[in-house]
Structure formats: C-alpha cells, structure tokens
Image 1 (cartoon, one colour):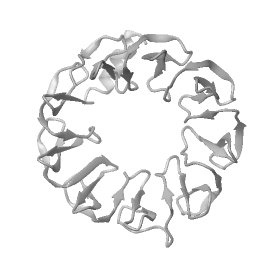
Image 2: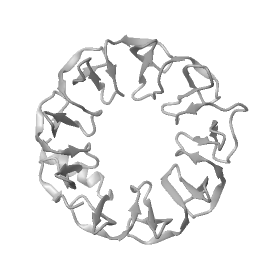
Image 3: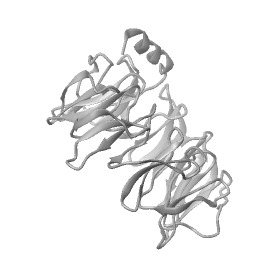
Length: 315
C-alpha cells in the first residue's frame, strides 16, 4: 500500500482510537501512537459512534473520545453503541439505553445483540431468540432457537427441529430453511452449507456457485477457502482460485490485506497472495483504520502498513 493511501486512511480514521494496556489498566491511543485517554480502566470496549464502554470496580459506564465520562458507571455489564443504542445489564437482565443514558428498552433479557438495520436479536431467559424493534416490540409471536442480526435486508434464523433459512423484514422466510449452518450476506452474497456442501447464494436464495471447499464472507469479490488438509487460499465469486491454498489460517480481507499464519508465524498478504509484511509475528489481527494489532512473544502492539511499530508490544 502506497504512502498516499496510508495517509488518506489515517485522515479518514483520525478519530479512531485503539486500546492499550499499561500495568493492567486500559486506555486509548490514536493512529499516531499518541496516548489520548490515559490507562485508567479495568476493561474497555472499542469506540463505536463516538463512545466506548469502560469498567472501573466492576461497574460500567461510557466515555467519549476525550475520555470524559458521559454516562455514569452504574451498569453490571455493557456493550458498544450501534444505531444509537447500547446493550446494558442490571442484575443479570439486559436491555438498551440511548446516548443520553436513558433506558429505551427495559432490562429483561438474558442477553441482547446490537441493533442492525433497525432490529436487534434478544435472547430470553428460556433461551428463545426474538427480533425486537427500536420500541422493544417483539416482531414475531413464536421465537427461534437462534437468530442472527440483519445484513443487507436478510437475517438467518431457525426454529426447533428445522434447518436455517433467511427472513426479510416482514419476518417471513423468503429463503426457506434448508442450510446446515448460520450465515450472513456481504456484498449481495452469503456463503452457506447445503446438505453438507458449500454453496454461495444471492439475496433471493439462488445458488450462484457450488464449491468443493468451505469458504468465508466475500469482501471486494474475494474470500478465503479451506481445502481438506486445512490449508487456506483465496477464491473469487466465480469459484476460481486467486491464491493457492498454502496458509495455515486466514480471515477475510480488510483494507486490502489479510493477516495469515504461515509456518507458525503470522504476516500480511495482499489480495494477490503477495507478502506485504513478512511472517514474523506470533499472532495478528487485520488492519483497521491504518493499524493492525500484532503479537510478539506474549505481548501485543500496533503496526502501520509499512510494518513499523506505532506502539511497541507492551500489553
């Protein structure tokens, strides 16, 4: 990746903050490696929509990107904001608050998942899953064994003794239950397993590719695939091999790169399978906003696209 692209990504993500840990206390740095929120917290979540959940002495609240406490530390647990709402827990019951700290859906669930495309999956204490709208109204009379958040207008779900299908936002199965595993749409396609075989379907449920291998979600028309000997490569939407399977593990691409394991070390490849950062780490996560978290020995730090450390491995 060239310097211009790198600087553009830094500019676009100049407000993105990254977690660090110093003496077992958590804080945040910016993409230049400057500490912008001092390590004061026992636990932190990632910043989402300008706020992050933080924990001190077993109570959670929310800070803004200057470190100011916006919503007081009074919850037993908390998730990140999504679509203006965050899941919070009180006395083992989960509900939702807004960015003013006002309760918008009373704590009553065993667990809640983030809002996406106007709806959230909530898990009842009897283990049934439902979709709820922004007012806390359940959208179906009968629950599901499991359900996934909406992506591109479709949500995968299944009921007892049934296979997995996809709902639209009228909460009717528009792609009939037939799949073996949960999945979600990305760029108009979902990688699923049908009767033990990998397939790629479109939002109408039509099979666009039948594959010989397990594969992941598509990004920029590409995804990983895994052959029988557990080696990973890259294919396109036509099922054509773009990068031969030789890696020990890999995720989907992010910002044009993927963190892959090769011969017990982790590095970064581009979408043609070329090494951009040679395998040298004990572990790594994908790039996000211009930085990637990497592990050397037992500690993590952050590198930029050039492989230079912005924050040396100290946590």
